[in-house]
Length: 306
Image (tube, rainbow, N blue to C red; front, top):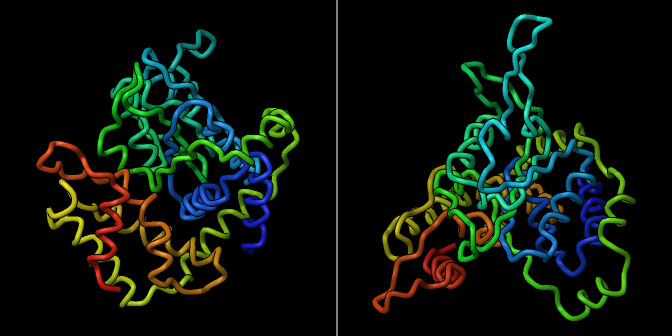
């Protein structure tokens, strides 16, 4: 069952070169049924990765460019009066798809960003007093530019907490960049990609993850990590219960890709950074500088006994 997931990773790796680790984490996020946030500077392949994942998983795909003048109705949809029917008819927006690529999500205003909150949590949208269910499975893959760049709005904590994982691709190494420069255009590669899995197979894999065993001692370990983040020693605010659930779900998916039917602490540690780093705000040091989240997470893991 999980063999096709490895085939998906293999195909995506042919388009996004030299980022095997990030692609594996992105697949773990989708297998766990979560939404994915990809944060990095423009031009490193964020949009291409999202498109390649959607094609390889056989999912319906819509791309929406977020801009400062985008309105919530541009995301959800709007009702238009139809003369022939003498009534308003709802025209669904781009969110009615299986994969919504919210490109440069932090260039939209907080009002527009909030249009995604209900969809990401409940897999439904409410417009003009009527609730409409979204397709299943439903994923939001959002790209975000660094917040120090011009024309960006910081995502609110409530929305960040709805992303199961946050990844950063980073610049390619010399060998990967040379392969990109000498190789075929990425857009051409995307056009030649095919669906490795079907949506029904993805749903089946997601269901199989519930059979991955998590022992009581493993849950104790996750709880200890969560409580450590709430102690006030490392972060201003700790992990939410939603974040702890996401950590267990991602660890199950990681264990499954490793070929195991049970979760071990190393699985939790493998997904800890992408699952919780974007949810936590580091404490300011006496010098006024904010410590790097990766350093704090290392200290966090060292402080919690396995």
